[in-house]
Image (tube, rainbow, N blue to C red):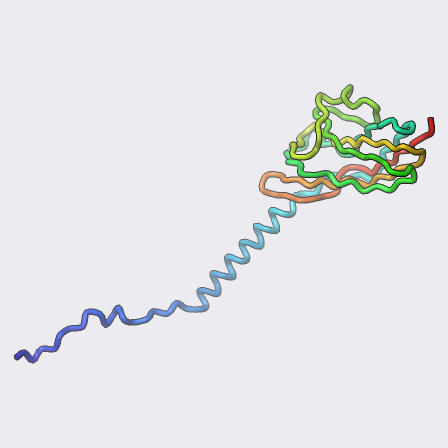
Length: 178
């Protein structure tokens, strides 16, 4: 018989190691703070340019007129991936039809033929806008009156940032009888 007691190899592995709760709370708060900063930065891109100068135009009943309301200047160092253009207007000319277009490489103030001033005229949904491009509104109405258009609101992505912001100038279109 042996007087020796067997050694216990598992004594150290049976101990429960506790993680300090303060360290866990610190990590969670740190991750939440970083996520909040990333979310704020990604949803707050720099403001787009706006103007208080109203673009004015007139057109006969049922004749569309194109009004340039927001231009990306030649030194515009951003590429906007447009997802929508929101238009807010009031009309005394009955139901007015207002359609946004993107004028590439040109500038329109007021015209009945934007293709004479733009290298290309395309829709605004799902396209990109860069330096030298302009948002142009096609406006028409079936009755005489006035159409007051507020600044447009562009929904876009700019790199990792996205937002919906006011842009450009307000417009006023007078629809005259034929």
